[in-house]
Length: 450
Image 1 (tube, rainbow, N blue to C red):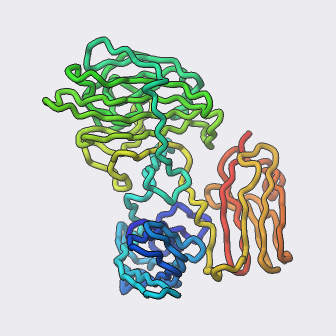
Image 2 (image 1 turned 30 degrees about the vertical axis):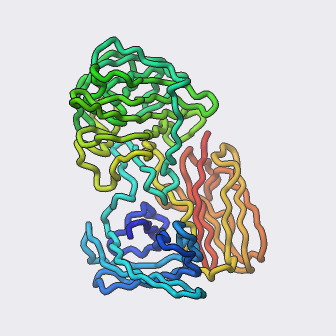
Image 3 (image 1 turned 120 degrees about the vertical axis):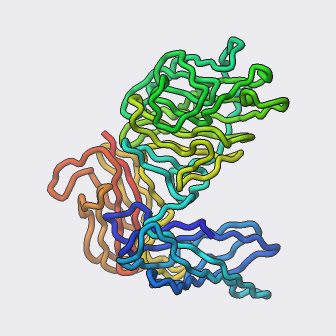
């Protein structure tokens, strides 16, 4: 049971890392492996760990269909870590899952290890010193987690003509300006050895290294850096394609074999997708990069990661099968995203323990988002009561109080013009808006752009 996420209750320190002295809410994903529907599943979380206190150990998961996944997104567990709890600590808990209102009651007890100041493989990786993060397709709770959506280039891509050598690099022009580690690029180097690098040149680097690496190739993106393309088994292709409909540029290694792989070639199929920053905006202006793996045959001796142009900052996901603590094994039909967007979980918007099926408060995504001059925020109250609606910056500081006081039940709309409580204009960036009532607190993310 490791599909869960913890959100701290303090808005000034939301990094989804549960630390000593903090209280957090816990959202879990459970899966029904049985042969029948699981109706009205409830969860009861208990512990005898001296460093953990469970403040609310009961949660509802609802009905779970066969092979279905359910999340307690409206009814969180609430836990607290003692101030003297060790860091890098796994607290032992027990989760009892049981059905209600069923003809054949069922229950199971599963162990749960709650990390305190410790990240696990389902967490985000990074950031590096510049601010790049990595999110895998199995980091399911985070908004930035990519979805594996393969686009085959074999019939539409432009092939790189490889001149009968194993190690070859070709420079191509990008169809848009791509900002990477704060530098704008219009050209890209594509290598047979499972890497791309921004800028021009014909350098080769068949021997993978940890990233960042001070070598002859800078500004590298390594989706699968290894000694690839065996000229004895040169049936594979290296292709690139400008996807004008989706505003992205794709490079694909199609059935490229490992060099000196023996009598049987070990072929890899993967691609890198560069998203045009003009259409896929980020706070820093840097472009987002998604790596997709259609077929992984031998991933024991490669490097996956990124580095800057000076080769002194980088984010390594794996080197020679040594994965970062937060990384997941690279397998077929998986994806990995590199972005400067910090972690956010819009699914996890409640604080408290609302009654199932009863509307206490609803907070909607602002429109437009991103915005430049003004944006509209809508919320709904199930009953009249005191509310507080505020804007926070990414450091948790209050930027502006939009509404405060008693409001009637129903739908309410408020506009934010990007100014602070003192009337000054805020800068471009990510902000959070937080609705607090007597029963719940809901938080969502918005982006202000110039």
